Structure formats: structure tokens, C-alpha cells
Length: 189
Image 1 (cartoon, rainbow, N blue to C red):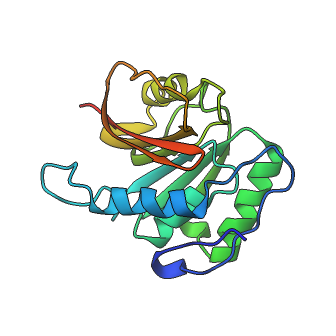
Image 2: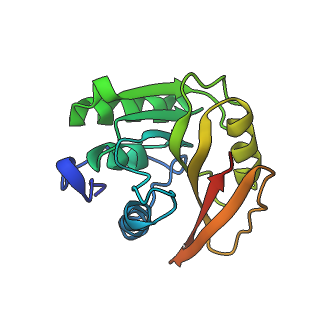
């Protein structure tokens, strides 16, 4: 069962995807990711990149990462996915948690995104494993104005998958959790 693991919506269940088109981030990896993000000292002023953040959940699937961010103090989340079933599922989960005023769902491809309206401080990218699109999506999202300068970008890939650091980004951290590898980057000013 897919649940929010921290914050004001802790323990609330989310609608789960059916079939193989969407692979939600495992609870253990999601919890570890949010602990890293919440307690990291990546900003010069020592503030958490999560609290008060505008968040982008790209390759959003169920919307679990963006909804977890809203539960833990983000002020707004935009969910980007190109699958019609995922878009419906994300909308259902947003309504279920009562986060309609704090969320926006956009149907689009993260490697060819529409123009961003307001740059996000924190972005979660969870592309299909072994698709090789993570670096291209990071560069495209930055170019389209989705990422603030600076912004923190987390990427989940298969544990044995490599991601080249795109121009304009620096690698901050890398962790492995079972079948997943989480990479954390900063979009440079």
C-alpha cells in the first residue's frame, strides 16, 4: 500500500497505479530521500530546501513524491507526466489529500517540457529505470524555466544506472537503496 510517510498527511493512503506503466518510489527509498533533503545543509543560509519550497515532481506517476513534499512543508507542487492514466491518478490523489489549492498537474514530457511558469526550488525526477533520459530531462527542464537558480534536483534511477552531470549542474550526493539509486544535484546560479 502506498502511503504518505511524514508530515501533516502521514499515514494517509494514496491511490496506486495499476499495471507496469508506473513504478512508485519504494517507501524506504522515499523516506530516506526526504530525510536527506530535509536535513541537508545545501543552502548557504542553512535552511532546508523543502520547507516553503515550490516543488516539481517530473515523471510523477502517482504523485507520491510531490504529495510527500506538500505534506512536509512545501508550499506548492507541480506534477508533470505524459501518461493520461497517471494524470488522472495524480488528480485523484491531490483531491484525496485536499491539496487542490497547492497543486497543479501538467501533461507533458519532461524531456520536452512546456515552458515553466514559476521556477521550482526543488525537483524530483523519477524516470523509467534504464531509460537514459534523466540528464536530458534535467537540461530540458532547466532550459524551459522549471528550475530556480539554485535549485535542488533529485533523480531516482536503477542502482546500476549512471547519469552524466549536465552542464549547469553539480553533483551533491549519491545513495543506493535496494534496486534504486538516488542522485542529488544542484542547478547552479
